[in-house]
Length: 330
Ligand code: AMP
Ligand code: MG
Image 1 (cartoon, protein in one colour):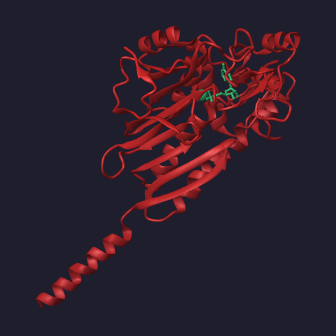
Image 2 (image 1 turned 90 degrees about the vertical axis):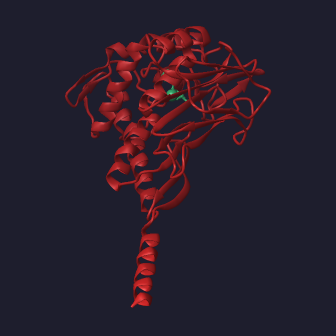
Image 3 (image 1 turned 135 degrees about the vertical axis):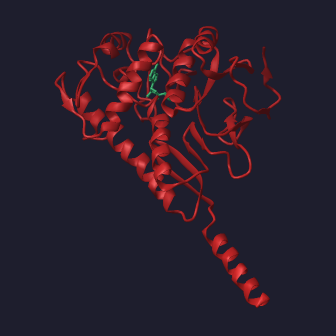
């Protein structure tokens, strides 16, 4: 009798072990960047569901994919366009709100200017000044109107490249809520979602060394139930006449931002906010960015080209500096 009970007990333990979530991992490519996932789940189907979520957003928010919502808007010649995805409208609405809040430092209507530079294409080069001036005059996010499901961008060219990866993290939250996943770490390029706290504590997220290679970390950040996005001048750019031109544009000049910053990271529950704010604070520069972040309770980390690290008052996360060439200020 005792033996039978023991066997039955062992059976239950085995059954439970078979069902226990285990780490499922994958590395794939979408949104022009690497998607790396570690998800605690019973099988790996969630990896595909998450990937599909990201691909669907790319299909509606891509600037270059013919037929996407953003492509149709940018080719509508000032006419109304009906979006096929409610998520594109939601992301664009969020971007416009944050554009207003950041005084246009984040400008989702800079598509024409960004295209003129050709970052990441074979035609990357410094545009003519007259072309930049004409495109800047059209980069008016205040002209964009969203009325129900009809959107009108006037002459502006919409570019959600500075926000889509972060928005994707918010969509992954919904996908993983529905799948009952509790713990996951998903990186969509420089935007990372730490869901739960790993079964045994916090997730450790590497902050890239902006002056190193893709594998070099500057620091390790411990996060639980948060997103972090990093905007860096290293992400995308080209060299012409010995000068490096990167992809984060000063909406005042149409030129890549040159203010001594090389990366900005932002932590928040909202992926969209982390992505938008990291770009916006980069544009604002160290002094104005720190002030804006502190007064709006944004948790941010700024890194300068002279290897100094600055944190906002609220940036109280476990932070381990790996590369001791950098110095924490303040
Ligand atoms: P991120 O890597 O999130 O900082 O986003 C940079 C991308 O956003 C660029 O590759 C452009 O597509 C776009 N972008 C560049 N400058 C700005 C800006 N000032 N506001 C909004 N989007 C921008
Ligand atoms: Mg961004």
